[in-house]
Image (cartoon, rainbow, N blue to C red; front, side):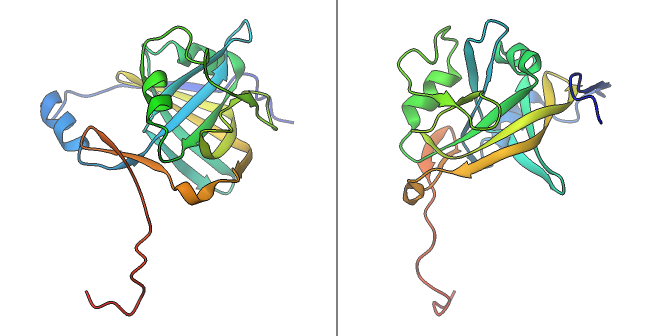
Length: 188
């Protein structure tokens, strides 16, 4: 049986940048992304979390997720210490939740309802998440200012209110995504 208690850790040696930081930041603002809150428990079982748009599925076989977290973010040590994380995909209208988890507040869960995820017991934002995945940390790669975390999905589900659609972030603004209901007969 595999020992999952210590994830694979490595560091990528970063070359000199090919583009100015501010130019890159401006370009990345044009990439729309879903807004997620990544959560874990610290060593004292206190819930921790951060707003994260650098989240994607990595593989379907086995199901894995990739999450990028700034090395300076306090929630990173909770993720590493708990050996896993929950990705909570925020539903449209959850701007206040995203803002709290993007802040430096020490008590991000103070006025927020959460429950233990069915898989690991890590924090699940059931009322604000459109969907969630529970992940066991299997790799941790330092790359510049961030850690690239790979999680093996152990549980995941949709919430009951999927009609809201996901919250998205684009051009430094929140929005929501709605399917094009024009149908296949509409000429383009």
